[in-house]
Length: 215
Ligand SMILES: [Zn+2]
Ligand SMILES: [Zn+2]
Ligand SMILES: [Zn+2]
Ligand SMILES: [Zn+2]
Image 1 (cartoon, helix red, strand yellow):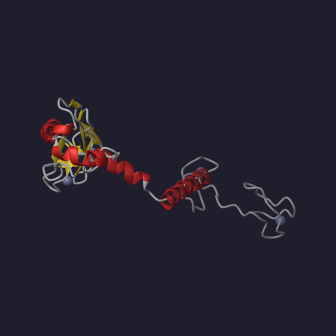
Image 2 (cartoon, rainbow, N blue to C red):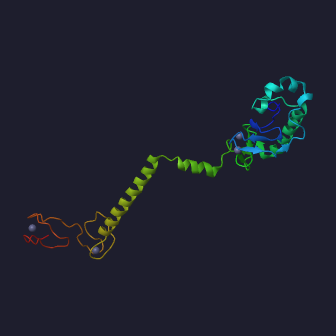
């Protein structure tokens, strides 16, 4: 009974007891379980004295804890088979077979409705992108951070250069290596040290304060 009859998902559980029948079917992809409604058994599970097998082996099998090993009445077995068929019919709409990989997957979380394929065959784009981002290596993240840091430094440098690249006299914009302002002719590259005595000279000075050398 059961396994050979099942026409969809690969795995299911038989939760049936003496009192009734219930089955749980599992999604091929995520393993999520779906149970049908418990169906009470109208006939007794064990037929007792009238059942030949039960009267012969009841003493032995009656002690077995596992229901499956107990001798069940023919009517219970028949009802069980019917209940299984019913459960299949009841739960089948919760699942759908992927035409590509032929897995039976739950519609609830493993089915890509727009693609008409299971999510293994047609993954959600958003989920995939999030996963790709999450998988970005630490090295990549650091490389990116380092690059941003470099950008900042570059900006600072450019900012400084921009300041330097305007004429101190007329504030005309200048090429950073210009020696004279093209607007007013102001000399732009100031010697930092006096060529005569080597004393440090403030930018814009016309004479060395130390030796009087004309700059
Ligand atoms: Zn699923
Ligand atoms: Zn598939
Ligand atoms: Zn100028
Ligand atoms: Zn000097």
